[in-house]
Image (tube, rainbow, N blue to C red; front, side, top):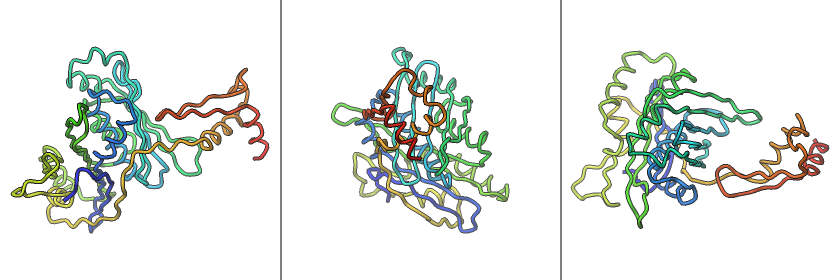
Length: 306
């Protein structure tokens, strides 16, 4: 049985290599994140969904260094971002707009997502510029918006399902459970197999039915299920093979040298445009409270060394 308190990402494929799947459990890691990221309780569900979806894609895409998903909307989501890499480390931020003050309830968030845009940034090793994609929402949920990106921008045949449950702890809202499942049909898969998988997946109301944990304990007479049971129910008779499992952590990966390298590349293109009439730049991490300072002299000296 999978514990909802353990955060991890697991990859699978079918024995015949028709499908591959990524499963993410993220409640513990998200709760660590919200201790450091200012997330309005009304947006915690959406924030958690974006974190799960980002980590699903970080495991699903091959060869990337990291991937970032950013949701923006007219009045509520000023910058809702989650970034993750295949090694299981993610970071996130949640900046809200003035419209949050007028939010009437969950329906208001759904309506806002219908007007949102999703910007996806994929970075590859040894490539300075990220690969960018943007899609305008045609749905009222973040998982559906992410799946829309996969279909429209990546032409990847996927199915995705998420399960969330919020709770309270010490007068604050926390995430009790946060699960996500992404299944990709590999090239050449028979359409009948796709139909069986799609039909069975759509019959599931949520992932949380497979992890029956109440108040942190499992009832003695409860028939608990886990991710392998979930995959078996989605595709009966098919053998799924686990290929990897990676612990999932919230951790900001910013560091002074990393920003310095990016500034040097920008300065190489146009030093005056970078500094203007300033002799020092202040760089604030968009995810945490770290602040770094760089002088024009330092950048010039680094350029001479390259």
